[in-house]
Length: 274
View (cartoon, helix red, strand yellow):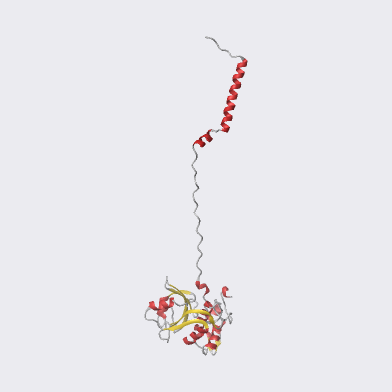
């Protein structure tokens, strides 16, 4: 068998060819990588990003309608304790009578005027105006007719009523009113008022969901600005009085002949009213 031997020159040529083939393979792989060739024959599927939920806008809380309700207090104890809505009038005399003893109806009227008219008046402002326009003589509790006449001069439509035999009828009338002045007595029911022969209070903003009413009570700070079951008001209506309540149904700014814009007398008011 013939023994093949390569010359030194042949070995150099073979080595150079091997190096050239290796370099060519590397070059081809750079320009045409295996992954690229596979990708070109089999395109990758397009993956859409998952949709993101748009956050719902934060709910704006409904304004509290009771924040704009005036709630004057009539007595000297409230004034001495420095309670909001109390006034020096509670310890003063007007036409021979002490305001703290008879001023509940005038507090109710001042509450209604200040709450709905866009104006401002204190109970003693209302006292002076009622004397001027209604025939009210002062020095004692104001009667229904004088209240109605004074409210008419300030742009309010109102009327007086006796206690209906049906609670639902009373409930409906309160619901259709913007406010009511009611007279209550513990002689009829002591479910809320105790030792009360007769007293005017104001009710606002009937809530049909809870069957409650927002009460302002000038004679009792613990009752003032409280939500109360309307049935307690109905039970407590003073039936020995000629009328039991005055329902205020509307306000007309054009009919307001007073247009009072400031609080008279020395009093303590919440910040929003100062």
